[in-house]
Length: 298
Image (cartoon, rainbow, N blue to C red; front, side, top):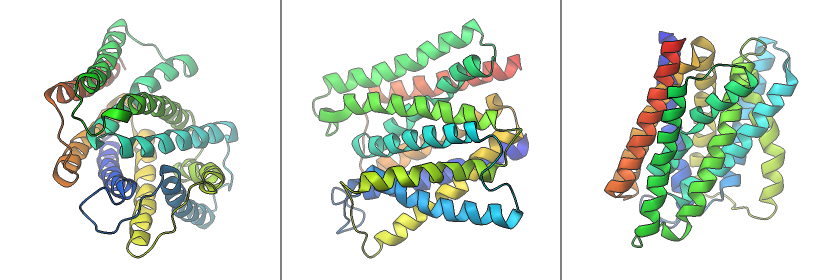
């Protein structure tokens, strides 16, 4: 369990690094950190990280002589497809929302994991847990309300749409997390990780036919960093879920909301109102308490 918690902490750091570079490349010329930066669409960023991740995963599988295409192919495909959809939408929300808000909405994923685990894995859910599910969504409603009344926000014209898209991303992430739990007894973490790029590469390649930016200079390094740290993050995350009860492991990842707030504030000049800050706190506390309740029951 302690090793699983450590893996989750390290995974959160890796995801923070990934999100920084995704925000940087997604903002393109609309940021002050790197001059002359081109704008990259979300699907191209998903493609870049998937290519690197696939070659690393496939090489490890061959070296370890594991089954190339895994054992439980049905759930591996579900994991790859749901993860691809979730990540693509999330990368777009990072571009169109403050980083702390986009990350917080994404952290609704354990709520949906709870629901899917109840339906698919037949896990019991306490009545009190549903209360905190409602609180979590009330926090999102508070963030949305702020966007309705705050006309000075530079994200105002698209924020409500992307808050909804962020929730949709969390839904698909919940499916992906449920798949990881389902695959715990049949497939190795590296195989589970490989199925993400295996499905993402053809899907994102097709999307790149309509919108693609040719990398130049240091942008190649940034794309490589996204790919390499994605591999670290996914393997660490999957191993964390395999090494302990999800209810204990999952809450550790919420430290990522602190990383996102600091990165957005210090590097991208993203300032949030007291209403949004309150909404973020409500979401994080609700999801955390929900997970702790589940752990106590277990």
